[in-house]
Each structure stands twice: as structure tokens, then as C-alpha cells.
Length: 221
Picture 1 (cartoon, rainbow, N blue to C red):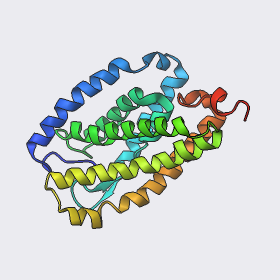
Picture 2: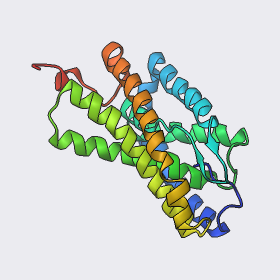
Picture 3: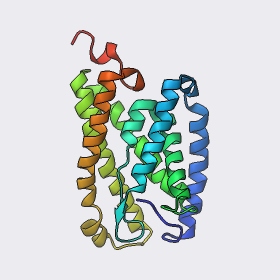
């Protein structure tokens, strides 16, 4: 999922920068930075950035652009909301890029693909599931945490496959056979790890999770 600088045509990268800059600026402006004034919250936010930087650095792949790694976007979004999550994941990618695991010129495209799409899909699924499913603790844990994490990874795989095919980097048949199916395996790991961590958060530190409210998911149940 980490694209290199010379994998796609130059126009793709410039368009990505033109989209990413205003999106990042808006998230910086709209993010609830006041929450991070609490040392516990700022330590958690920074800790997740450091942890995910290490996780994103552990990747597998055989060809440029066809790398796989855990994402953590759904976990970050549930814990901090879309804007802080997007800024945080962009910082994660910055660390990975400076470490040489992704292209510098491709930073904006990678940020839109991993951070942008990851956070957008996570927030969208949370809103959709919360609108029609019962407000119950186990619904939050199994649907919003486990299942949503898996869905996000699979959809990122679909978007990555579509991008690489549209840019004529690899044949669509090759991507369907040798790349996209592995996202199903990755989704299981993502769901298990993200779901496990979110379960621990809402049980022992519910104040760490902005999308979880005791009055909504526990009271009267």
C-alpha cells in the first residue's frame, strides 16, 4: 500500500498533493485540539502514532506498490474522531516516509489512500451502523470495532487495486489474482487486533474513546 515516487505517472502525484493539502489543512483547523490538553489524551494520541509507525514499517510485498501492512485507521477514528485521526495517520506516514519505507513525492497520494480513505470509511461505517443497529455494548465491540476494521482494510484493498489498474501499473487480472485476495487475510488480523484493543479501551478506559458513551451503550441495558 506504500507507493514509490516513480510507480505512477507524475500527474497522479500532483493531483494528490492538490487534494491532500486542503484536506489536511481543514482537519488541522477542525480537529478538537482541546482534548489533547489533557495529558492522558495527548499521551494516548502520540502513543498511537508511534505504535502505528512501527506497525506500518512492518510490511510484506514482492513488487513496488504491492505491499501489505496493518492499518489501524478504524481504531484511531473510533478513539479520536475523524480529524484527529487523519492528522495522526498523516504523521504516522510521515515517519514511515522519512524512514525510507515510502516515496517522498508519493506522500500525498499515500496519505489520501491510507489515512484519508481509511478515516473516511471508518467514520462512514460508524455513522451507518450507529443509525440503525441497537445501542448496545456488544454491537459497538463486534460491529463498530471488529467488523468495521475488517471492512475498511478490504475496501482500502479495492481502492488500491483500482488505482494501480487505472494508472496502468499492473494488469487488473494480476492484481485480482496476486494482490487483492491477500487483503482478506489482512482484514482478519486487523479486525482481531483492533477489536481486541478497542474492547480493552471501552472496558478499562472508556474516556479514551470519543465515540463510546456509557449512557448510550450501557445505561439501562
